[in-house]
Amino acid sequence: MTAPIEGSIGFGGEFNAYTQDDESGSTTTDMTQASSIQSIDENTAVIATSGDFTGIPDFTVVDSWADFDIPADSSEIPFQAFWSVSSGGTTFTMNIESFDVSNLETDSFDFEAVGQLTSTDPSLDTTPGIIDATFNTTGVEATFSATSTSIPSPSTLALLGIGLIGLGAAARVRA
Image 1 (cartoon, rainbow, N blue to C red):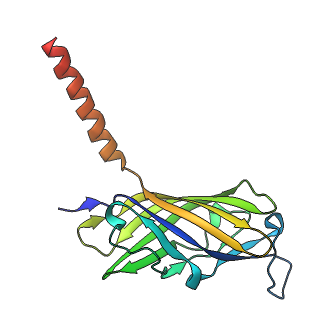
Image 2: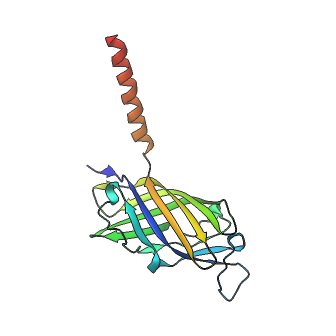
Image 3: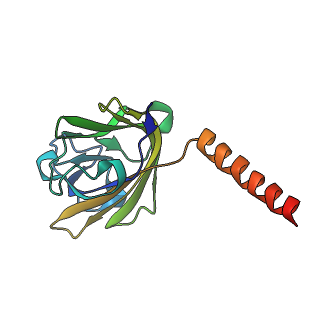
């Protein structure tokens, strides 16, 4: 039998923000002017884990972290695998289906995405997941923190609901 992936994994890292009209590839520090975000992969690492992600040690460098455009255009997502991390022979990946950039300020913005968490562990099923991230810049440093979390599938919620109805009915019969 297999089980859904449970738990959360947190990341911390650095990024560069680029402007659309800048062909030289230089970065910008004004997030309201940024047109794309590129992580600095070797400076992006796991900083916290829970549940099925617990076997991944803190400070494990991510295998890959996808770049994305601002403003977000979820109708044409340029990538599927948003992040991938390997540890102890197991690889976890988050494939996103849609994302949103919000609270765009001069020195920060929020990123949210929904998708599927996968694992090479044969005992774990593909599971719906979300990722929340905050990107900040001080004009010198550009850092982000992100957390991916598994969310219960509708069938799990349905079973929970049926169980609660059954408990309510049993309590009613006793009364």
